[in-house]
Image 1 (cartoon, rainbow, N blue to C red):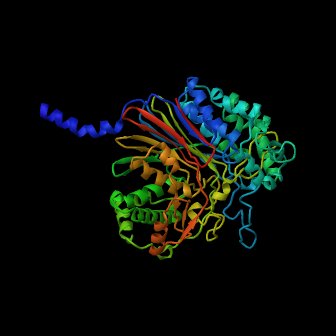
Image 2: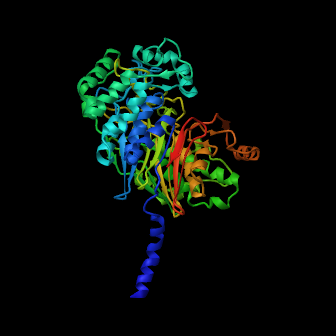
Image 3: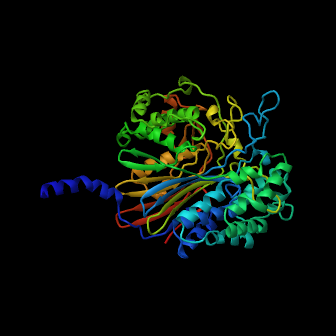
Length: 555
């Protein structure tokens, strides 16, 4: 009997180690804006948990970072409930209005109308962020919705000083926002771009947030506010209806689970493509021992894995409520083994040699991401957006809400290239109440050493950034190294490897060129947020991307 018991304990030991200690004993937040990070820490200090903090951070970003996210947009929130051990994906992605059609951005000759899916209310999907935040608060939070929204309301009412980034966004989008009087008045109060340090107050947005705090999500999706938004949208060429808002619901989706050489990965499912693409790439890479390869060979193999996985993204992925996808095959280790066998050790695979697919819609890099952990071990990763900078640019009068231009994430017409060169087919074609494909992918990582939360904005480059961050954590990295490491990206088409300064050495650039790669250096990109918890010593670290103005706090 004793022998059997010892044997059972030996079998369970890896699982017990993987589970780690029960509680980290620290609260932590990382976000793209200092005021948002402070909002999350504030509500946890007031007795809230990580879910309350995630609501507070998300709402505060609506105020201080409206060029990237807001309650006029949507996104995905990945939750881990420490009490039950369960993970859930809250899909607050926008959906197309009921009057939307596959050809709505084409002229009578079938040509795509330039800018039609990017500017003005016709480009706006039905927002999902308010519904998502209300759900998270109601089902997981400890505080009231009003308590969670209080920091955002105060920021909107009392104002905050413009930082250089916000100022630069207003400069770059002046012509776009000038088309819409409410947005122009809200962000250019004296008819000019306000200077850095100017205290920007948003009383209309404060009133809207107060109404939501008092009456819940219903204040946004029904009643006076909903009618004001619909009337303004329709008066300016949009196709929203009261029924579109009334009928919007978040989707609860089962997160994807994968394994890379013993590291457990929890990430988001479609309509995000990110989880599928990263897990497929990691399955390909799992057959190589990257730790024993040269740095040049390691990068070659990672780039090839990106190429094959992005090619499948283009052909197969879309809204799971509308499209049948071969997810089991895409995530199969046997399928990955077949792709792995096609990778040559010293030669790039020309993308034209792979089965072709038709181009798809662009995806904005102007998104935001958060990471939150509380002292009890509850976790939240969130990535959300209004799509391109300041979304559609349209603000319904008296609401303070910038509407997204998320309809541009659909395919306006199969076969037409997009601004980022992404490719796809009719799986991501416009349809009523369909959700556009996304790359947003907050992710949890678990090893015997500890766990990590990570996520980033960056359009299609989100996937490669999270992939590289995941490999860094697997190799012993922490929150700071995850968000700081130089980045490179390959997305099948265009057949080009984009890389930040410092991502490759001169010898690696020469070596990759000799393998047949076309390389293009870019400006630094992304704005990753991460939290890591090392079980040994209960060490919690949080980090915001050094490329931008975000902050991280641990207490």
